[in-house]
Image (cartoon, rainbow, N blue to C red; front, top):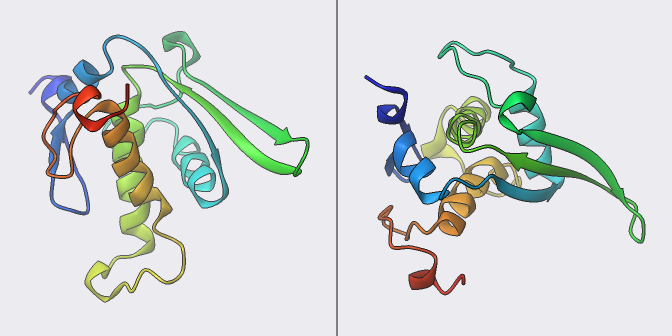
Length: 146
């Protein structure tokens, strides 16, 4: 199995191959600014270093950059992320795993604690890349994102 054949399974049961995610990125890094629980989930994912899959999601050599900033007007701590084509699938897998660790009995999870931000972030990333609600790549234009 090549690296591009590895898969991420979302909480909704959609499976995405690393290669599909990378292709949707069109060779460009994925950028985002996160606050709150979403930022905390990414921070937890970055603390792992090399994981059991022998993958990393924070490699400056690849162009990955995670910068802590304070938004001056509101004083909110934010995380600016520039994630390389090579690293984004690993980050997304770790976010799914982070949610799974916090909610091992998802069927009993009522969604009321605001802790599903890691799961929602993965879904949001897939939407921005051009995947529809069924997990099919349709392109950003078809979703009205261009």
